[in-house]
Length: 132
Image (cartoon, rainbow, N blue to C red):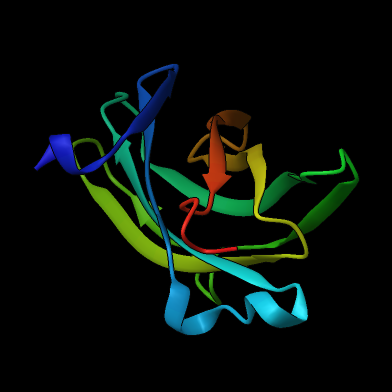
């Protein structure tokens, strides 16, 4: 199943895996709108139970414009992961260019109250040449 994910990064035993796909049916290329869906899997192989608190994204479009997205949880959830557990979610990203990139980090809290910043790997958003 891990071959589904094109990108991965591990921080202190917590791995974030990303699979990304362009969605032509959600895009309106003639109107300058491209849309991607990304599947994230967070795997806790650390010895600590962790609770996801916030997300921090840096999204760049094809012109180099940077959009910072920060907020609590992911898709309305703030999962708690015991050692050996994982959490999957799917979300999307619209752009006004046919390519761009995303990266960032999650902030987790351990049971002892300490925080852990877990890196989200850099990944590109690229529409096929046939898509505008």
